[in-house]
Length: 450
Image 1 (tube, rainbow, N blue to C red):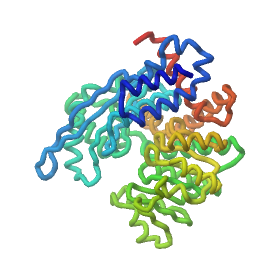
Image 2: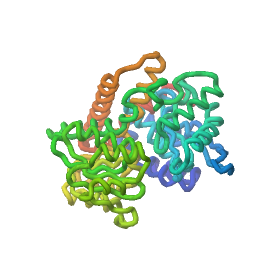
Image 3: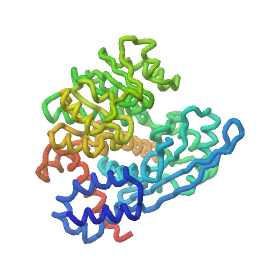
Image 4: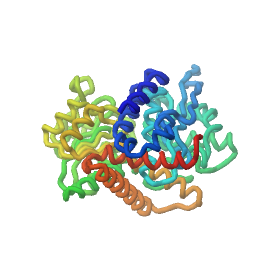
């Protein structure tokens, strides 16, 4: 469809050198082509031209002083992409890889992910190329205070509500919120992922991992299958991976891999989750330390990964859950998974599979749960935190968990129903993209050209 190709080519000219952003846009636009042909109003209203341009982009310097007294300078970003359905909502990522293109890809994905939850939230994303690893608490505090000194003027509980992402956990949210409160002189629900001591929600830390497994459970139920007895390949060892593994164990499955930026663990008996939590959450250590307790496990350093992919996807497993970062699962990885009998791929991270890998999953009729649907549990629970803050209530862990499970079930049903509507019942990429797009586009039309 030349209309879509022309839009993407124009985008490449006006937003150069942002490959991840182009990938995210192409994924959505190519899959909604049947809808655009069926509903000419979307073209007449220039919806996709408006959607691919953020409503607002904020970029700023973040100067701070390290423990040796040296001044450091990082870049800060907040991309407020679309507010048709509600205030901008999306995490902050602190990682050396962060640049404008990464934040735009994440923000664009967030629009449709948030729409799929059925909750009143728009899409946004932010972050910095600051690396929290190896930094003292005092350095992280000074960086967060400097970052918020600019960001605070652009956010608010009914305007833009950031959360955490890679490199931004409860500690960072605490420092950010403290500076916001100091500058704005308000105690409100402007950030989610807060400590439960002062306004945070139960299940928020676990939500993305739990949600991905709940989505996987729906996928298996749809095929008269269950998680019981399944061997699962998981990447990552942050919140998403750890709590995905926790929920897998609760539902009778066995995760046998996990990874960090230095290497990957394979443990045939099943990952020792308590040990991984201790290494990553308490000691801030490396997974290589896992071997000190379990000498029968296999550890592969990153330098020894296959040139064309990631070690964790080269083992046998029934379900693959990429939970680390974007484009970590390549076409060769996808081929290896299929050859080793993997029947389900459920994305816990944002766009973790390359486009070639996604194409292979779809062509082979593999049950594939795309990230914008399967990993929506985090932002859904963030919105539940916003609801609790607004009403000054605290729901129990069980209440929030049950609401999360219901939201993930509804996302699966919506994506499945939409895929069936367009004649491709097994293509949840099409179903999720069309379902999310339609909600946002119709709201944009009703609100006029703004």
